[in-house]
Length: 217
Image 1 (cartoon, rainbow, N blue to C red):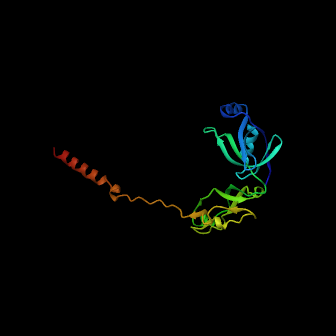
Image 2: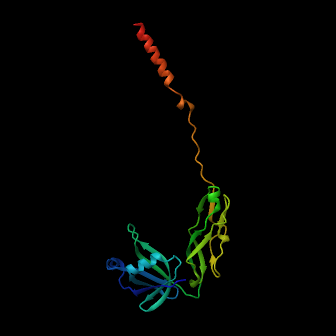
Image 3: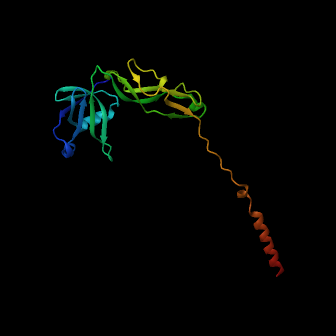
């Protein structure tokens, strides 16, 4: 796993004054852990936002806090309700010798033959899986090969995954990750035959009677 490092400093400014930090280009955050307690920190808004937006949800982030390195996982990112920009981050400090849990993104790779052969619809049921491993062994993504989905109803389950050594999935093994379902066929609405009944003969007959009546006057 690629090591991602961000520089940070301990933060004294808290509460409502944090807004002034954001205006000055500072990203407020907090770091906590079983071995270090909890304390507020600040990072460069532009650098941290750019790095954290690209990093996987299970990425190990090394925070250099005033020269002291902490290995962390991002546990929560608070965003601006309109702009979507990161406003605050919670980092959990971890030990490299103790297993941790993290959510890892699922990526479907390959093509499901049933989609082309039977016009099936590929349905992705899980976007993330919870795994447990040592911090340095956490995968950035879990790839699911769907090339074996040959029939309508073919599915890939959690139990079908092949994971790196030391990585354990905590989700239900019978949970479906991806499945090919039958195409949806819209029912054809029945239209009453009367709707198509020609109206021309009635008009012709009425016109004929009118002409005959005019001739008698």
